[in-house]
View 1: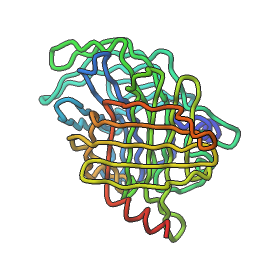
View 2: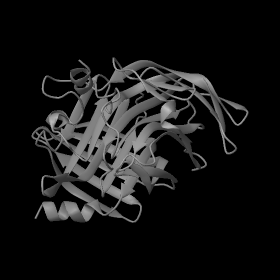
View 3: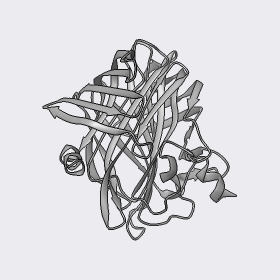
View 4: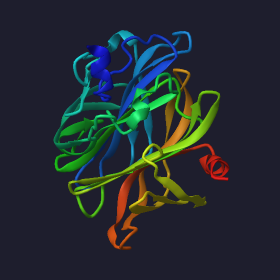
Amino acid sequence: MYLIRKIWNPSMFQGHYKRKNYFEGWYYKCIDEEQKCVYSFIPGVAYGKNGEGKHAFIQVIDGITHKTYYISFPIEAFWYSMKDFRIRIGNNEFTNHYISISIETPEICICGKLDFLNRVPYPQKWNAPGIMGPFSFVPRMECYHGVVNIHHEIQGSLWIDGRENNFSKGYGYIEKDWGRSFPEEWIWMQCNHFKNPNTSFMFSIALIPWLHSQFVGFLSFLKIEDHIYTFSTYSGAKIKKLGNHQDKWFIVIEDNQYQLEVYAKQKIGGYLKAPKNGQMSRMIVESIHSKVKVCLKDKKTNQVLFLENGTKVGMEIAGDIINWHKKSTR
């Protein structure tokens, strides 16, 4: 039952039978109502190429100061449910409806609980357990991606270095990755802080190994109120434009009905560890206070369905995906 259950519940731990060359991690973005307290928590596990260096971990990003922390735990400190999404690392617990944090190191102390209310999970279809669609069923891919909560409200506080930080009435987001390694090249951005509070946006493009070759694939969604617009390689959508000028990026995506325009400005970020062959040996930079402008148009009527600026954008850029995209469209 576990094998079937985990396919149709991508948020739960996928690595029950993995002991080497494997990583799995969840990404929790937590922002208070006034956007003055901006944190991301990344719990996970890592097994090296031959099982060496196996450990559990929690990474912490302070989006205001850009400081990052990597707290390592013995693999025995990791526990997971085989029925639903619940994991524990030491005295820290992570689910799709709350997190309970108890971290005390010489560098940082965090304790408290945040509950997630009015959760919006990523919708499922008969041929798509998650955002990867039919690629969810393809075995031995380098990296799988899942979206757990598109959007949720937060209730609760965290004590960080002796100071209470009230996250109540703030917003959050949860996603995850698992597999052998992060892609060699990618762009990722996510935002759920727009003028319209019921809005969430995510875009990811990466160089994906495939058999003895590779291709550029992408995933994106825009949630406005109760409607979710999705764009992806497997749905037939196309990236018409992708480029940048210094720290400013622009993306234009089209499918048969809609055009999605994205303009992003990357801000300073902090350093995180990322997986390579199961080991957390790669360093990347993530910002949690970048900016974005998103425009959705109906191609048939040329009507603008959505046009807003977003703040506190999570953003990562690794490698030169623009060059690979140009090669793939020649």
